[in-house]
Length: 374
Image (cartoon, rainbow, N blue to C red; front, side):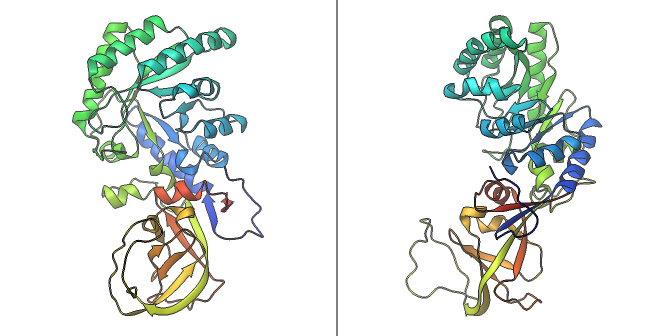
């Protein structure tokens, strides 16, 4: 996990994190959710669980904070974060002890692991007087985690309620879009609510959490299409980078702005070169065969950042007009700067807003320093 450094004397590449913007974005999303009777879980995994980012999301009104990585939850616990902490990924059998130690509640999709957790939680509950909350995941077509057969999910819910005293059944949830790219709809979220209602009838009590997905559910919420009964959304990208909704869903949320995460890279070389490689094209350093467009001679800048720092260069959004990322290797970013109005030279820096993938890489890269804007 990256530790923040002083604002001066930093080397490049540099990650600049605007905490005020994160707080404002979280508040805007939390208010939208609240207007529909929904609580907001702020997802910090995309920012590698940086405690300062988590605190900004908490100030913005998140009801709880979530990550799929136990190491990140441990860091939040040690940083004194007071909100309930949610483990977003079903723990493996080897992770049960740590899941109970660092998470207040978890998403679950495997009955055998639930049984292991129940055994371990019984002693923990006796010692602390606190049960571990669980949210059972239903697979509604995205084909990642979750019970595909609603009857099996309902049976698991009954077993948790009746035979696992160290666990508290809090509700049900769904993932949409992360693997199968399935869009959240009134139909699939209504199916989740229906599952919750059947379980409630069998238990004779209500379930406080019916978690209707992530950032990809926000466009439906903004349109007023999320069905009644959804009580929680788990949002990370829609608060942190805020680029997916306008880019992929043609949706903008009032009060939510991009630019909370900026990557600043130093220019190493600038030179006019052909735009099409010379010789026989085979594969690059990552075993891929890129496609190139012959645009003649172009002015190319090489920057000191690469795939190790941000993943794919397509996940970078240049702030300055006339800057076009066209390729990258492990440690080099190549940009076409022919149309840039600024006269560039080695030692200059270029800033990029980050899409989700680039934020995910950059915030966890040990070679990148962090500067917080407060």
